Length: 622
Ligand code: AGP
Image (cartoon, rainbow, N blue to C red; front, side, top):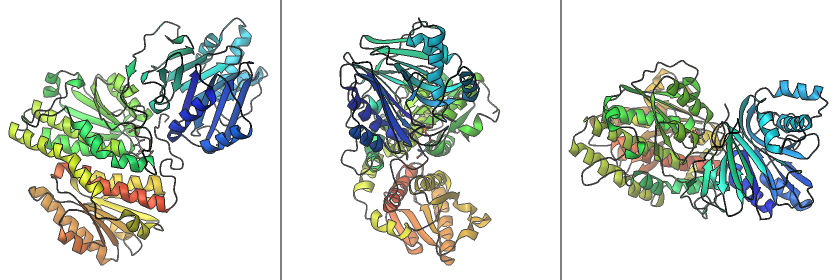
């Protein structure tokens, strides 16, 4: 949940690192810092609490320059978000610096041992211990180079880390190591990059690789050498990413989140294309490289995920059980990994993750693999850890998602789950060819419907948000496959506007939540209708009753309805229309108004939409 950037090469290093940190600021923004070494081998460090712009101010006031260096944006774990606790952290000599993403679990014990050796510490952080450990090993063995001392320091550390270090006494060299949180190594022309995520590298190169767990990389102008902790050479899996730098920029939108909301038609189109045949209704998921015979035979599915991805998992349950008739159990990854789950070799483990690096979800995957389950990931980042550890991956093609609040990744995850459910139905013959063709055709119509919903909506969200700027609580209601969308709508609002919001199954209102209803409580109700689906009709009628119950108690109802629905419109206070669709695809449409409502309320409340307080984009620590 921090951003690391390192550079070795022939450019002036400060702007390269600052630009990289700016592209990683969504990973953490409690403080920022930079360390560079100039031609006179002088270490120059600037740090600042708060946003990256505070660090840029500090550099403007006291300029520095150099040709290799490290930078860091912090999401505080140990130690308050102050300048003293900002990375990079130095050793006692001030000649070695370290940046870190992760948690050194035994740092207090190590700190005491180092203090007993006379080391003096400046911060409350766990990271500073690593800089002093490197110094200790260089003092114990003056002939040891930075890489050797770094490796020996790592052998004493327990915890998870993405670490990078450099020394003013070993010019043009950056060392990095990973155990848990991601590290990407960028391969330029005579210049090399280490970063926590791809966007920091994109302006300079698309040739990159993810460092593996317990691997060490040494970057010099001559190239990058990768070894394992024992020093044995490792051949990295170099890839060329197809994201362009523009995609990772705001493209004229006020916030990344708004840009990404409007990118959803493309994201859904890209996630679907080349995976279905409109003529035959056939679904192709050969990329998953698990034999089709396995998909015909396994017994059940367990899905583990976090946050928004967990909501996508709940939708996946509805889809897979309805279309492929395979039992699905969904769990928060943080619960799954500590629950001693019942898994058999015929259980398929699925993880869903935008980043592919979420610590809890990664741990759930590893737990299942230990119990000999086959595993499959739905992930948005090429080469992320989960895609390398799962047996197969269905990539969403949403492109880089920078806003902390997940939007286009979420709709793409639901589409990927739909494709997977259809693929299972195809292999297990629970759907006829005609039925498959019907589903594939509806799926292929989604992008156009999303374009219409986003660009031709009659709803003025800025105007609508005025009514809710001072609200302190929200309730979101949904039924069936739209119950997870009620949960997602509540999460969107709370994580960017800081308004308490709760998602609930509409049918549960009379079992308690009705007590909450009064004239100050906005209730957002998803009540789409697929007229050709009897169950949809039943849910629809029950939900109109919910709306009437809320209104009878002076509650405020914002209803999400299928275009042309007059009955719900008559019952609600405010109505937002979405294009008609099949029941099973309705979540991909019904979530859009909830994303936009949350966005506009948050903007009106002056919240930092792309970098909400206390959060980070990728939760790579527990
Ligand atoms: C959603 O808007 C949040 N950013 C958060 O809940 C996120 O979905 C969760 O941390 C999971 O992240 P992942 O998809 O990268 O695993």
